[in-house]
Picture 1 (cartoon, rainbow, N blue to C red):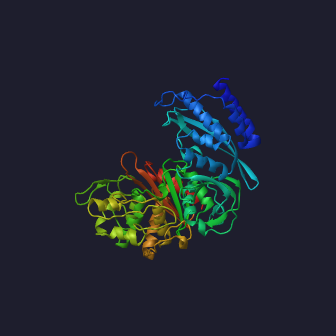
Picture 2: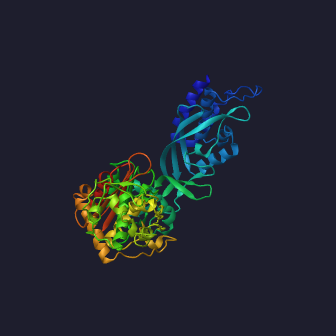
Picture 3: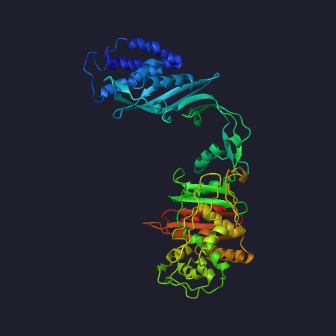
Amino acid sequence: MQRGAKLGIVGGVVAGMLGVAGYGVYNVLDALNSDSTSSTGNAGSAKSTAPPDAKEITETAADFLAAWAAGDTAKAAGLTDSVQTATTALSGYKDKAHVSAVTLTPGTPVGAKVPFNVAATLSFQGKTSPWAYESALTVIRGTSGKPVVQWKAAVVHPKLAEGASLETGTAKQPTLDFTDRKGKVLDPVKYPSLGRFFTQLRTTYASKATGGTPGVETWIDGADGAVTETLHVITKGTGSKFPTTLDADIQAAAEKAVLKRSGSAVTALDVNTGGILAVANNPATGTNLAFGPNAAPGSTFKVVTATALLKAGLTPSSKVPCKAHDNIDNGKMYKNVEKEGNEQADFAWDFANSCNTAFISQAHRVPGDTLQSTAHDVFGLNQNWEIGVKSVNSSVPGGTGDELTSEMIGQGKITASPLDMASVAATAKNGSFHQPRIVAADLIAGRPSISTTPLSPGVKRSLQRMMQQTAQSGTAATAMSGVNGNVGAKTGSAEDGEGQPNGWFLAYRDDVAASAIVQNGGHGGDSAGPIVAAVLKAS
């Protein structure tokens, strides 16, 4: 019988017999292979050092997979370059992972790598479940000169790191279901942007959840013995409930809104508590732009600058000409993005139309660290918030000369995220800063208590008046059209290297504030504005 024909028969026997007897196929395979000749030649032949050829790769992979499927751990491990480690892993696959039967189907080799499909049957305490996945192995020339499978833990399952193993049993704890502020379970499939945060929350807070019954699962035990990931559920238990500050309806709107612009992110907050109501990124599993890394927020930072100027004595009706171009003390020349200029403008017009030159012309009103202290002491920026998941702190370094004038319009070395700017909008609406969070504040270990100074009634009224004007007749009017209620907004665009500026937008509607960024989006009213508006309409 030719070897190729024999392998075909072995494959057929494995596939047919496993459905009946699982690992009991070994004896048949052993008999079929008893008269086979080694693909590497006779014992007396010269030891080869060349990489295995295509025939050796195919035959070695087939022999290994057949032995593994038959339950012949010794034979399979003997076809690897690490017999002891492979023996432990393959024995554990049967005894610890409780795989009672398995069919292994090799695919087409790519060089020395051979992909294969796994169709396993898991059996535990009288319950069985099919489990299918894909893996791969690599054939190399062993020290004996024979081709062997290069042993790696990932041969057993592609997600296994070295030192890790598979285990099937009653889960060590119930699954953890995250609920929104109304008690609705949040499905990470429906809300893909939340997946990364649920992973972080599960790691940090699983022990604090109550209720639920554990299911029967197959999971990965890490090298340290800790469960790193559940791979398969045989019998589902009931989940423990863990509350978050999120809102399912607003989250759904946020997920949908960011899909319209690549490189976008949005965050929404409850203005009265700082609770994070929604957070979404596009792509959902890409960089978490919503909570950082941060970028210059552009003219949305003028909410902070305007607060400092109002505290320094300006009013919405103060005359502050808007020039087409201007600089201070022969420093950096600035131009306006939104309007060419208006020599008769008052401060409210400057804010609503985002006049850069008007703002930098008032730099003398905020000497020293005034702008920096306003950001810090009123809006809680430039501080460590500890929101319950990973986030990047904002930075308002302050400065003089060109750095000061640049910071007046949200450029220079200032960096912030949509989370930060949503909080700025929330503070403007509420009058007081409320530290953002995604879970109950008392659960967050090491959460600092941030003390800020509320806006005075006069400054609060003036700031809200200017933000309302921006939303109704200024640069935010188009985006905010159809957003009803008590509203206020601010647009922004910020240069960030080459290409179009990043588009920014912040706004509030009644008790919800939100901010968004669109990388290379250009004008914030056109790019980020519709995202924020869609989120606010859902609130």
